[in-house]
Length: 365
Image (cartoon, rainbow, N blue to C red; front, side, top):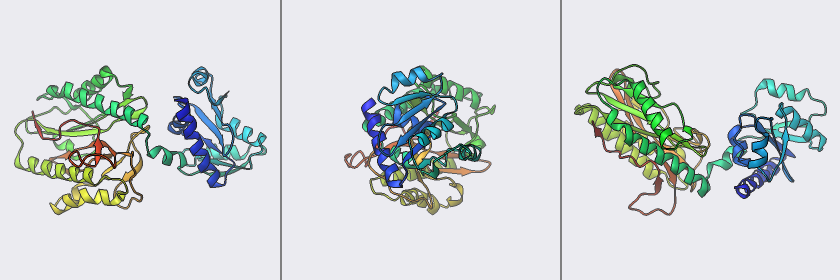
């Protein structure tokens, strides 16, 4: 993996040079991991536009950094940003780019008060943009996270029964993901039953499942740092006509969105492909969030698919497609897959490589 991380740093250095900066201070945890392989809650990189970088971390992670990042100089520091800014000054860097989206105003102010501090300029989302297109090793990790998610979901599906609470089912599902091999959870599991299904990000509570409930389950495992994201909606008992109607509508919109996720597609147009179906059926006011988002070292990352969003999809970009219809006081349906945009899949399979393989047929339990 050292060669992969070195190649990533080289690409980042090209972007830093293009920005006109002499070096960049990288402080985002996922970005540090992407560029070095180090998993740490306190690490940063001084990455020059040309030449060798320095990875700084504290004594808790120093040995791991030496072991896991053999191709980059490691400095053991507690106050990372000031130490690396002073190093930048010692090396004569005149313009130092920093991740403005990550640094606090207080932190920035403290850096400006250091002696001989280089000129600080925003870097922008340079590393996040590089992270958008995944290499095949990353996709394999993401696929494993999705496989664990699907296996765990199947293992506990039979536990959805009248009287079980949302929270107890969420705990069962999360434990199943860990038991199967997840490093951890991609995010806190959502279990929304009955009228709670009208709340897209409902926190599972003590409401007990009852016959007639639509139950939305949004879950994901994390494996090797990569995050799965899958949502399925099931029904407990025979569905009412309105429940089947909105389920079929969301299912059609979801398939349309998956089909539109091809290289070169405008992200707002992909969103519209699904959203317009829902609007045409009379539910325009009941789908308020974006159609999807990128996934990788973070569960929500670029690109974002939604109205007014800009940009186009590229090959090997993992995204979610997750339309929903939410009816206050009644319930809701969301269906979500994690997929990889591909240019060379067969027409029969569709243009995208769908990694979350749990059936999307309405499961009547």
